[in-house]
Every structure is written in structure tokens, then in C-alpha cells.
Length: 357
Image (tube, rainbow, N blue to C red; front, top):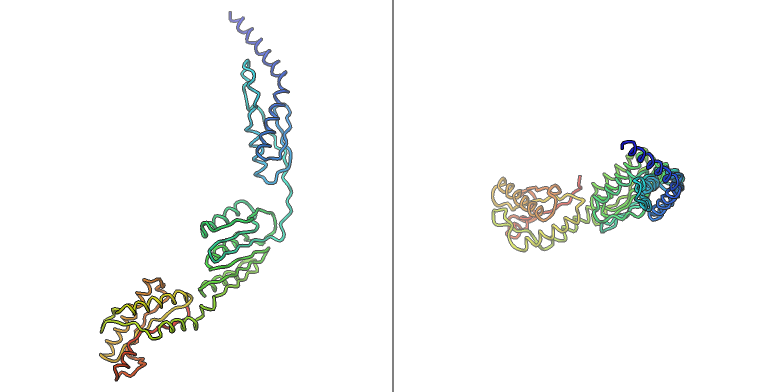
């Protein structure tokens, strides 16, 4: 009985081997057709040639990623006709092939000049255009830009390209994106070993710090052209504050530092608006009194009133570090303390614009 079973198994194996050898060319052709169809459907220009169970890919890929993707498609393609027969288990195998990738990578000439440009408009929209050296650098640039300008970035053509930009290309690019974020409007342009950033800002500190970084770039010809609008000059800002105050004054409760009257608050709100427009400068808030009472008392009162004004302006959007409260008491009268009218003139708050540093 055992001998008969053994004989049957041997006969089945021989028949299976003969069947495999007989159908192998047909199965190989079918496998090749399935792989080619899968590659074409995926948009690959790779071509496949079957030799037994080996699928050899040829053609020209634009990138390493495209080449790797073609091989992956070929490896994962299943034979569509390999389950036609149910007689032999091996006929049901759908992926029995090997893939040999003989594709070549398209030769790309070095990009020259090697450039990168970015523009930021008044609404904060940023347009990027230029070259980076690898995918990691491209991802870093886009991630940084999208973090600083959420939903405002347009990647026009940030492309990977071989070339010879100056050392530290990615670091300089990152610094320029950071500095562009500090500007109201602006742009930067990088070309081989040069980098220039231009734009506008309301702060002389920002202008000066960007200029220092641009001129200090290692291995680069760096430069900047950052302007502070004319409305931000010290003289024009002082005039604006003075003009707002014409015919008006900030009143206080008698012998107190409490601001009194709707007109006083209206004036302070107008002064806050001007102070915001002149954000490049500091403001000394000076308190003055008449000569009634002792000099020490008047000094303390004038200082308290100046601090009250600074506190109000801070609550209305003016950075505290931009202001200094100064009490001058009765030492700088502008009217005659012997008259009621003169004393009223001497009780005042003055605003003096100064440089930011």
C-alpha cells in the first residue's frame, strides 16, 4: 500500500514539473504584461523585459524616488492569469517573480546661477521661488515658512537642483526667512555667494539688527536695504503728538493721580493711536504741577500722575518698555504761578519722543 502511494506521488511530481516547464514561457509573458500595465498606469516610463521569472526594468528616471517607485510597482504586481488552473498549487502563486532594476538616472546639469527669492506683501502673503540642494533642505524651508506665515505661503517653484551655491546655503536661507518675518513688507534674493534682503519696518531696532546679520554672513556677500517710513522719524512723531494735544489737556482729580473727565480719556486714546504709529521710538511721559504745596509733595504728585498715564497707555496697546514716567514737580513752569491761569498751564502732562536706544 505504501509503495503505491509513493509511486503516485512521484508520478504527480513528474507531471507537475512537465506542466511547469511547458507553461513557464506563457506565464512569464503574462507576468511581464501585467507589470508593464501597472507601470504605465502609474505614469512611469519604465519598460519591462521578462526572462523566466526575472523582470528587468529599463528606461530613464528623473529622480531616485521615481526609480525606486518603479521597482516597488514591479515587485508588487500580481500575475492576473496564474490562478487559471486549479490542479497544481504552484499555479496559484501570483507573485513568483524577481525584479532587476536597470533603469538609469537622467543626468541633470548643475544649476547656474544658483538662486532663491522670496517676497512678502503687505497682507503677509509670501511667495517662494528657487533652488535647494536636497529633499531634506526643501522640507525644512517649507516647514519654516509655513510655521511663520500660516496659510500665507505659495511655493511657486522650490526645486531640488545640483549646483555650487556658497557654503551654508540652507542656513542663510533659514536666516533670511526669519528676518523676512520681522519686516512689514520685504523680499530677499540669494545668488551663488550673495544675499540681499530689502523691505520696510516701523522699528529702527529691527532694521539695524537685520543689517548686522546680513553684513556678518560667513562666506557671503551680504547686504540689506531696510527702510523706516518717513512717518516714523523722531521729528514727525513729536509733531503728531503735539498736534493732538493742541487746545486739550489731561485733567486729574485735585491733589490726586486719578484721571478726570471724558475729554481726558479721549485725548489719551488719540495719543495712543499716534504712539502706535511711531513704534520705532520711546516716549518720556513727564508730569508737571503748579507751585502750591511743598516741592517734595509736588514732585511725588507729578510722578504719580505720569505713572497713571503710562499705565493707561499700556492697557491700550503701547509697550511698557517704550515709555518712561518722569515726575518734574514744579521746577519747569510755563505759566505764572501767581495767577490762576498760570497755575492751570503748569499742571500738565508732556510727551517727549526720544530715540529707541
